[in-house]
Length: 195
View 1 (cartoon, one colour):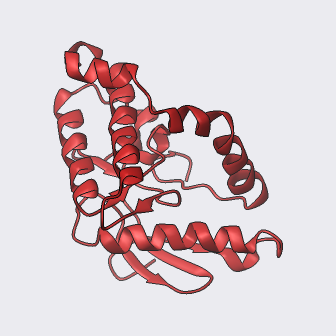
View 2: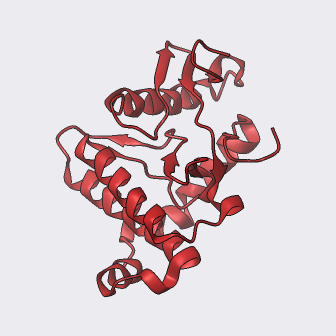
View 3: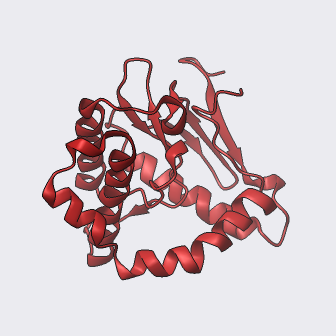
């Protein structure tokens, strides 16, 4: 528990020795993204980061799959939150997962789990592709919970995933899930309801 509430600590020193470099890399990506987003509401605050440990603030809320947000205002605010991330050169890169989207007690969106985030202050071509995929994943959730409010433009975005995204789903994502969930035992629990 920190001065302003619960704190999430990610300690990679307990990772298996042969996986520690991957754990450190993922922790470093999260720290870089959170540092760039310090002034953005609705994302965790980076409290401390060193070689093996990351401490960040807790965000109270329910995960999207538990709360099932059907209010169009939630998705409008979520799109605005995404624009705030992207303006600061951060693409989340893992927003297809509903547990990474929270619905706060006030009904607002929040985003957690920045291990795969891509921080590119120069907003490179790769960054722009990833940012578009962030939006496409948000629109997939809007299609699930609020489909009647999708615009034609949003439907076109949904219909055209980036080739990189298709390749990631077939190759990189299964490996990432195996390493982080099975080997490292990582899981962000905000919104899980079973604390």
